[in-house]
Figure 1 (cartoon, one colour):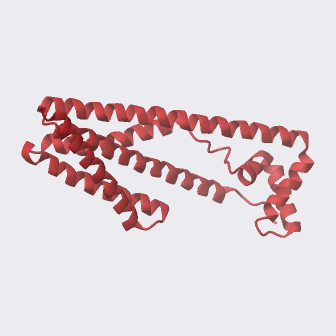
Figure 2 (cartoon, one colour; figure 1 turned 120 degrees about the vertical axis):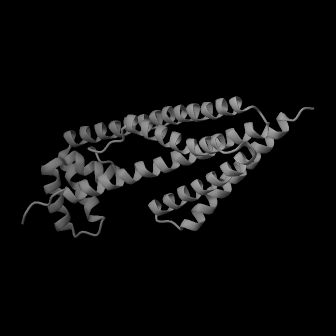
Figure 3 (cartoon, helix red, strand yellow; figure 1 turned 180 degrees about the horizontal axis):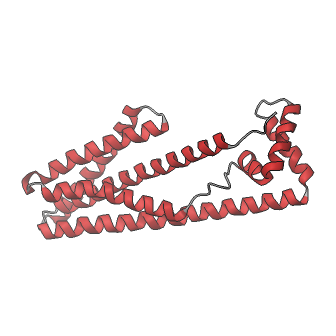
Length: 236
């Protein structure tokens, strides 16, 4: 019997990793759309000058993108540190009692519906090839070769936020002033609907519900911030 390969597992892990990054990118773009739209709508509601609106929009995109980058970097760094600590503990346990590790691995495999004899055989082969990787995947749910990269996460979130934030900012700046707010509202609604559809597709969830949630949340945020800007900007 030939030794089982891990090509399928590696490919599956790579696909899952890409999907996770794509989901994070979609959510980052969604945050950029809503946050920037809320800022520019609030400022537009105060009937400020064109320059003030530009400054507020650029500041919203810049601050939001940097905040997303730093927040994602810190979050993923903490997750990576935790994963490394768990792998270190598991490695020490395997070095201290490899026999128990083999029995534990066989039990984990058997719990998947494999017969005890076959589970033991698979556990022996996996242990001979890479005991730590086998325990990490089956016991800890961690792929030791695919640990989260905080730099990638921070950069992806920043870029996604900027892309999303540019949608309402560019529309409200480029459109004629008398229709800038309605035009931006339409653009944001369409962008949120697309974001909701993509998010639902990645999660294999109902698209209409996801799109409705995204659009409703965006409309509420835009309405509230525009109203607050109008009230604050109205002379007493």
